[in-house]
Image (cartoon, rainbow, N blue to C red):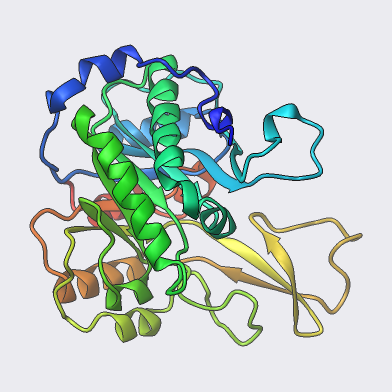
Length: 326
């Protein structure tokens, strides 16, 4: 089975990888302000660059690529005999701001996880090689942490945990930690075999349910999962600073808009656009609740995500209070 498609930018060790051999650059986790970047093109405007500086953002969680099932109908020779391939690879149009620690994030589509289960060691090696090569090619500095993001279920938990173990083993010689995202319901499950988790405190409700008031965040939904029981992994906390419009027609979910649509050919008279966003007061209440139920001296706040349009809904002082100025 050929798997080289996942590497893409070369298979030989990168200068970064050589510098990190034998764990020489391994460091402990230091709390610091963080933010996700979840677009397919890295391109920052002046407001976004100023945000990083003003709020002393230490870590940028940068989505590098997704791992998705290969398309059997594609005409590309690269896809022949591949169970899964990288998709939506991040394109760099701007240089990276100085002083940021980059945490590469790879999103694993659940269908791809099912397909690669029998070759996890091979895929984990290629995923790590691709990450290190991309980081080196784009001069992103030394990588101290890699993050996996996957909506794993109870049925796929075993396979996902095995993938985490394999990726962690591949990262160990370079002194790189592995973290992964944790959904609220997963707090009641076994902990993934990683070094650290990021608790995703958003998308708590059903977006397709017309009776949901706010699918991004409902504090009552969060309270139901936070029982005060210690979790087996050190956690950072990801808070939502985005908004969207959920589109319904005759109580049927039709789609999602990140900006209010003005195209009459899509949205008809009688359709409902449910605007959802999270207020500063709700974020403060969320922060207080989480820190009460899951106290930690090492937890960082990570905002989702770096987008000037959404971040403009909060004042600079409100952002500082959310971050608590780590």
